[in-house]
Image 1 (tube, helix red, strand yellow):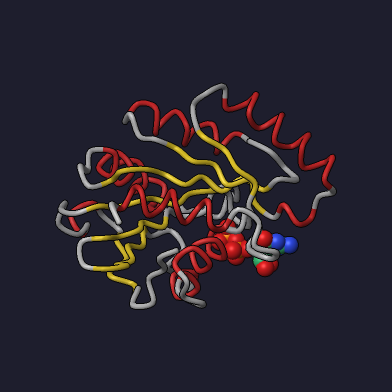
Image 2 (cartoon, rainbow, N blue to C red; image 1 turned 180 degrees about the vertical axis):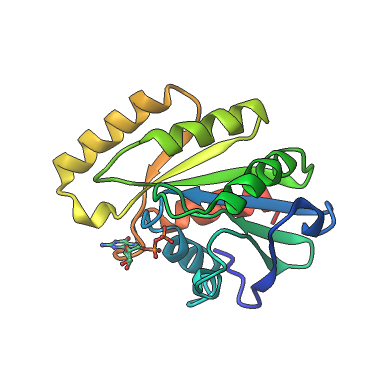
Length: 193
Ligand code: GDP
């Protein structure tokens, strides 16, 4: 399975005008804070520590673009669910995410959902955004290693019900490797390689 050992942070955008040129292919990652998004990005890309640079204080409300290969990018959306965002950040967020929806290079969205918590409000908002943009969504039900087999089955059933056909879904654990290959295949398919 292809990983991207040369992946690097391309830029952190506070405004849509700072986005990279809309060429090539791009995949977004979103989820509640602490859902395991940074860990998933690192594992899927195959570069330990990659997404950590984007979590430094002051950068957490930015859209971080990583270049995996020429004209192949991922976009790391700020984690949501904590009321930590200030007024200015909230004001810039709306226009930025609206601009993101119009990008032709954006081919899909990974949504990280903690398997112990299930889909919550912020996730639903993001799903609505993706639906309006006709953006395919693939949910990674994260930290599946924390659940017993029957609990995981139950979590998958409930998530599938909550998604109601709006996204594809798989269990995922960066810890024990569950679903990593499957998720890498989805990433590669959206990126076109
Ligand atoms: P983010 O805020 O969504 O980027 O979440 P992080 O990737 O920083 O992960 C949040 C916490 O969950 C960290 O303590 C991680 O070590 C832990 N974590 C992430 N992925 C997994 C996983 O697959 N299994 C377990 N057990 N813990 C995980």
